[in-house]
Length: 328
Ligand code: NAD
Image (cartoon, rainbow, N blue to C red):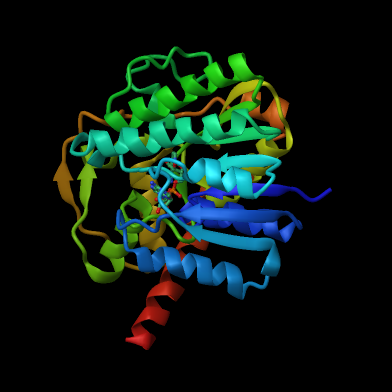
């Protein structure tokens, strides 16, 4: 049976893919996003245009341009619609940026979540899915990362704000029996990638020579996860009200940054130029998801290898740049 779903952050990188997938399977989506300028709002508008051009949705998709920091917005959205689920992906990303603007990160990532939870507790919303992050593991010594880790040593305001929102979700589950699932995404990449993320920055360097810092000479391991795999995890979590749960959504196979870059260089047929830099205090050397719990309870199965994912990402990036050049 088709569902009605509120997707926050629907114009963003992950949000636009998730929205597409819900619409494609016949659900109705109300998408909300403030199209902020953390990166170019034109990219977010282009994501929305693509959703409409792809022909999915039609009347099934309603977009609301609004800021979740506006008190009363969450309540208004939930009084005007009856949602089966809230998929809360809106957020301020960017670990290092959060050092400069901690209040903004807490206002968006924590307080907006509080408003949505408050609005949801008085209504028959069956499920609340929240976008969390591998960054909550912070200064953990346990590798691979397991959901039972205390995660009480976050290394940046971004990570602290996401962990606080996960914890708040438990309170609402406990007091109001709300089903709440936090999904910890691990370094997501793919078409419509955020331009502040490493995959995009390397592509920009290979294509335009734009400067990019290389931390620790590329000796950094990341559990790169292709966006389609994340989408399938989000859909599975949305369809399963589980009380209160937290899941890692990664591939479970960390790849050395230097190898990820090498793959892009092979596709581009040239070498990237980097500015060497030490690993920032906000970052750890390695992220590695234990995805056993997601496999068991969500039937989560990452399918796209890093080799394949990088090729798909590069193809998208090249096409995007060529189209932009032609239009200029
Ligand atoms: P994104 O920046 O592309 O998408 C987030 C969207 O939220 C943006 O379109 C933005 O305009 C919107 N937004 C931000 N503040 C808002 C507000 N106050 N009101 C309404 N809309 C607002 O980022 P993304 O990479 O797609 O990330 C989606 C979610 O997943 C975020 O919560 C992020 O923290 C989380 N996450 C992403 C990654 C990753 O690797 N991309 C990893 C871990 C967690």
